[in-house]
Length: 343
Image (tube, rainbow, N blue to C red; front, side, top):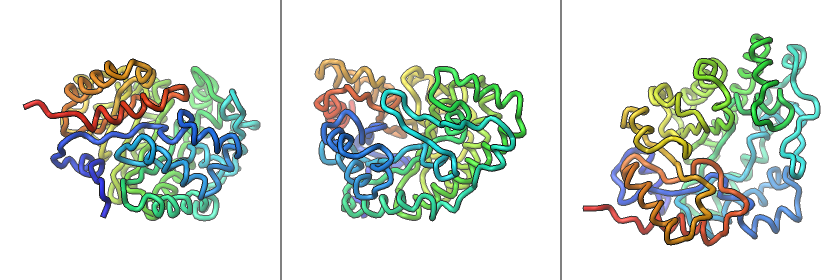
C-alpha cells in the first residue's frame, strides 16, 4: 500500500482533503544534487544507468516533498530505441544528425522489442520503487508521437517546426507511417512501464500547439488517443498538451483520466471546455516561481480556489525552470499542503 496515495485518489475522483501536488521536471536542473550528478555523468548515461536514474527520481521526494515521483528519463529514448541516432548537445538541446525526410528513411525506422531496447528504463523503475519504499506513487511518461516526430524530422528543436509540418503536408503517407511506428512503440513502452510498477502514466505533447486545430486532430490527437485507449484499462493516463487548449473538448471525450493545462488557459475556461467532470492538472506559470514566497503562496491558494479542490492536481503549466531557487520550489509544494478549504 502506498502511504501517501492522495495523487491516486484525486485521479480516481475520490473526495480529498486537499489537491495533490507535483511538478513537471521536478527531478532536474534546479536542484544542486542533480547538477552534481550532471557534472559527473553525461545525459544519456544518467538515463541509461538505472541506479542514477532512480537516485535522480527520488531526490525531489527527499528535498521538496511532492505527492508523487516522476521517473527520470527522456522522451527521446523512444527514437533512440527505434534506431534513430540522437545526440544531446549543451546549450543546443537534442540533435538528430540524420533527420527523417523521406519514405525510404521511414521504412528503415525500426519498431523495436521495447524489453530489449529499453530494458534499462524498466530496471530503473524497479530500483526506484525499492528506493521509494511505497512513500508516494511513481509516474511514468512518454512524449506524444507528434512531439517525437517533430524532433526526428526537424533534426533539432525549433520555434515553429516548419520542416516537420511541411513533411506532413507534402509526404502525408510517410508522415503517418512514421507517426504510427512511434505510436506502436510508445504503447508497448508504456505498457511495460505500468507492468514494472508505474502507478500512472503521462503523455507530453510539447509541440501540439504548433498545429492548427484541424491538423492537430489529424497529426497529433489521432495518435495520442490510440495510446490512451490502449493504456486506460491498465493505469490512469494524464494527457498534457502545451498550447492545446483548443483540443480540450475533444480530449475530454476520451478515456484519459486527467488533462494537463498550461498557464495560458484559465481554470474557468479549462473547466468549461472539458465539461466540468474531468480531473485537471496545472497550471502555474513556471516563471512565477520567482515571485517572493509570501506572494507566491497566495497565488497558489488562489489557483486552488479557482480550480476547486475536487478533480484537481496542482502542477506547473510546464516544466520547472533550471534557475528557480530550491526554497521557492519548496514553497510552491508547501503552499498546497497548507491550503485550507474555505467553509
